[in-house]
Length: 473
Ligand code: FUL
Image 1 (tube, protein in one colour):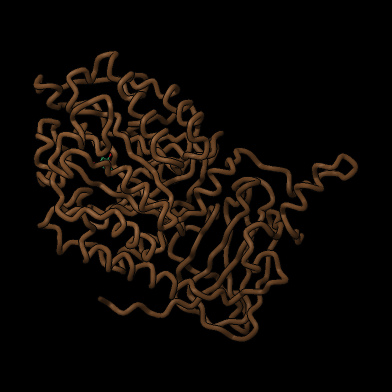
Image 2: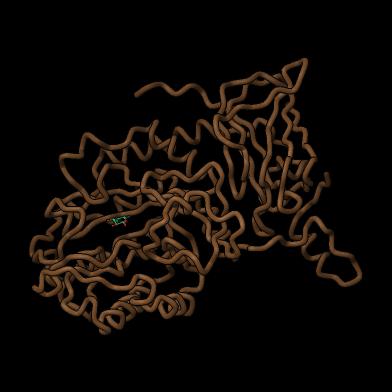
């Protein structure tokens, strides 16, 4: 075991030819970009599904609904932004266009947009309004542009990918900085298609010319993370419940997964031997549906459910993308916003104070950039100032140099012997963040054992907490 302080200094020293590079800090590929690390550190951010479906009570509009139905009476993007900030979220991704093809911004390329609605006499721009609210409240903005379009007559022909790339360019150039671009995997099938009302099949791998889309995003918004089933920036986690696997690699085999990939179960844990850094994003809606339905007003997820999702997304080396179905007034329903804020308060209570905090030790100083090096077979003892009751253990690897831990165990000393902490799930990967929940133990000593790893583990943070028993709602 070796203590390293601080990581950035060592990287600098390692670059000097006179000094031999420390074996432990040799990067272990695949590696994230600086943008992927910054994205992962956001941890939780919001999703908004809003559009014609909101007014027709649908989840997947067919593409035939008149924009006239879209008329929110009290639309307020600042109310959304305030809710997200109070819920501890760092950004928001909006469905600029869902599968029905309706556009929430005044695109030049179709009339099937906000311009055709009674809202502000067709002069509105909801992407623009949200971008402004985000700037005001310090949130990052991301946009969802559905590849599948059930409205356009030319969907399925060579023209549509040209239309799609032009729309993408509008979104990438008119609304300031974007942190994420969301490319949904659902596509091809029946739709209105300009009145043809038929089934259209496309080749999900080749039809949209994704390499061109990716390089456009890269050119116009180099910091934006591209989401799809297979990345390249981040990947779908393989379910819409918000859960990543306890074993969760930030890697994929780059040539294998593409938008619309149907072996989704692989995405829950990633590919242990993958060659590309494509971390998981866990998307889930605060209600059963993605769009607003009044009959779901009493089906908003409870604080307990949201907290569980947090531990199984952020606590499983993923990010948590929580969807808010904006209602017909154009606001987030009060039940949803109160729940989200209460969820954040609970997480702050549970993970508020690191009982191991010691500013002299790189693994407990609260600084992500300092770490301790642990080789396979090595252990790290973590001492508490006094006998303390604990039921959470949080671990972080210094991922800029790779994800390394393959199997670990955590133990506590009961006064006589070391006992294994039983988190009720496998203790395999750590990654950017791993949080174990376990029945309370009372101890002065904890121990982390690295049982197998791809390279020495760079343990950036270890934190222990006592989360008070949650009251049932
Ligand atoms: C899915 C879509 O089909 C849903 O409507 C929703 O947008 C969800 C986030 O992704 O693939």
